[in-house]
Amino acid sequence: GAVVSQHPSWVICKSGTSVKIECRSLDFQATTMFWYRQFPKQSLMLMATSNEGSKATYEQGVEKDKFLINHASLTLSTLTVTSAHPEDSSFYICSAAVAGSSYEQYFGPGTRLTVT
Amino acid sequence: QQQVKQSPQSLIVQKGGISIINCAYENTAFDYFPWYQQFPGKGPALLIAIRPDVSEKKEGRFTISFNKSAKQFSLHIMDSQPGDSATYFCAASKRPYGQNFVFGPGTRLSVLP
Picture 1 (cartoon, chains in turn red, brown):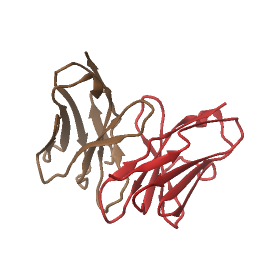
Picture 2 (picture 1 turned 90 degrees about the horizontal axis):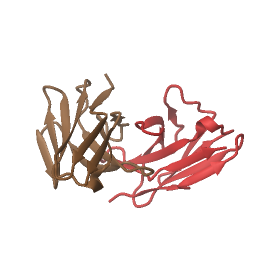
Picture 3 (picture 1 turned 180 degrees about the vertical axis):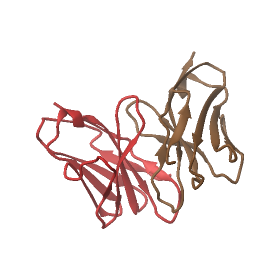
Picture 4 (picture 1 turned 120 degrees about the horizontal axis):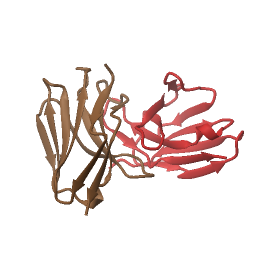
């Protein structure tokens, strides 16, 4: 099956610093990647959709200058949380899809971000 | 119209019992309905999925029942086991492929030993 990895699996950073989260499709080429945010005991909230080689499309209310998304290749997308604040602490999950091939999205294992 | 409703919010079932989770949608353009299982601290994992051309799909102990006219679908977990204790999300998607999913709010299932 299609495998998506995320790195790191958890990260602690100080307020005001930036942190980068990587999402990789290991055995397929992902034309589209999605970034989600999940608070405890809540559902997944879509933050942005990125297509390889294009600018990401952000959902309403998501600050594009704070959450920088880069989808530089068909196997890698990165989410950078800039000038992190404690309220950015959350579980970030990426998923990858192959446009035109399948309905399915393949989810990564998630990254737990704690901002102190 | 993009919303997917899910109930119950939480569910407690005895080992060996049947767990039933229900979802409803409004947008008739949705034509793919997956269910995801998520354990604490992990990403969601696809459990089973259905398209509207069938009314039921079964994979092992997991069954999706789909009612197109009512715009409802449900997940049945037969012979529920403590290892099934997790949060379950229904979702819906539509063409073209690679679209974002609309997720339900989730159901926390606890199966008592």
